Image (cartoon, rainbow, N blue to C red; front, side, top):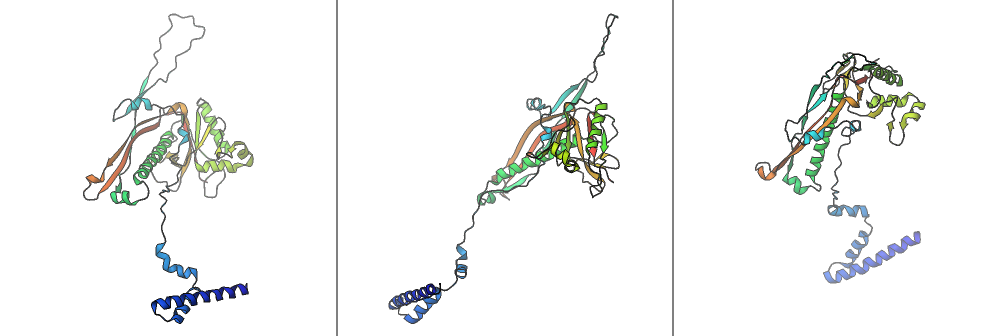
Length: 354
């Protein structure tokens, strides 16, 4: 290693002397000084020399956009709900109202009848008008300078973000509308959890609580087919922590979901509504939860909910019409509704406090 170093130094010295002498003959400079300067320059560290090269470093723009992560724009608990969108899309009506007919009376059944003529019984019917909600986003500006300077298509990104925002809002409003307003309607049971303290003053959900809800629905003669229970995140975790036997039996390790339980189709959603525990009253949509308010798991029968999706319009003003700011403006309007069709066959389990 030492011999190799000495040879390298001697070689550098010879090259420096030769190069310095050649340059001196052309330029007239002192050959000794030139050779010494060239020899010394060969021992300057590369990282120090690299300082003088900093201005040639280049930046790379990928053109990729990283957007926010959220589960709120995904609402699988709405899959399979009776869809009346076809009636809306064919109407061409800005009001977008559809009508359902409810017939809540069954005809009386005669057993071994001997009396004629048979009595006439009118089956009452009730009109259920449904007006679609209108969801509008605030306008987003995109300047011409941005369009020319950015490495990605900002207008396409903005459109995608508006769609996500609308979906998040309408899905949260859907589960909010399915949830009972309070505990005053006997046809819509609102229960409290009965488990142990989770360490924050909240009682955990137990399997017994779900069985209690099942019994209440059985007593109300709610059809077993189509019972759907949308668990909030706290309640899913409560069930998974209950015991290993339950987890092994009902937890799908592949999908990360809790399987169907006691006749309920189980779903999980992060946007379930809050209730005030002391009064069992649901908070208004969009209200901020306070101390004493907890999320609830929401039950509904597929026979008592409906959905309809109407028109979606994009509004776009071009920068060429904006003399002062030279910016494009984009926003959307979307009509849709997810709602219960009767005040029955729904329910909630609220996290109780210790």
